[in-house]
Length: 221
Image 1 (cartoon, rainbow, N blue to C red):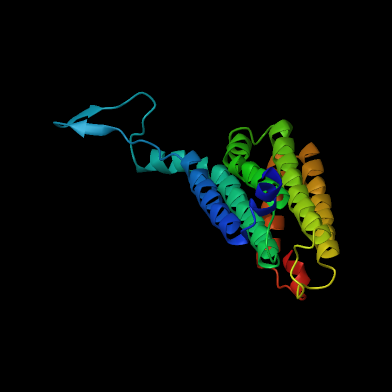
Image 2: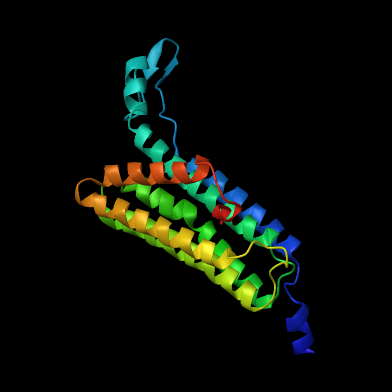
């Protein structure tokens, strides 16, 4: 009975894509919760009732908004990263004829990592000047990339890839992950000069990956 269960459990690619969409949507939404609007002081009966640390005018509001620029940059980085991983996973699922129990658990592990993305992004936003926060963020990207590659290799070996999938699919995915990680390493090494420059370079790398024209279909992976 357990053998039959293991053979049929997690066989639906569509259900896997559905839970993936939900988790990605929640993770992308949670990113914005790290952005907080500065509070202005309130007036009652013509008398100022300023809360401790509150703002007293438009100039101070503008001054209070300026530090948010850095957090907005990290938010953009997190959103782009989630978008790229969503595209990568969906591109894989589109080329699977079906799933199985092992492949489903690989993707659930990947989605578990995705659910932690708001934390690592918030950590980087809060401690952007610290190399440890940057290292944690990079290791997060590395683990997610390796999980996607592992799922693709497993699907190939288990005969779960569609017959009309592009030739060299796994090699293209491996090459893309290796190149991306080498570029990320370069960005992390830049933190020796400035962690802010490292984050800026990461944003540029993610933007380039998101908007750069793709010459070959395999570059989607």
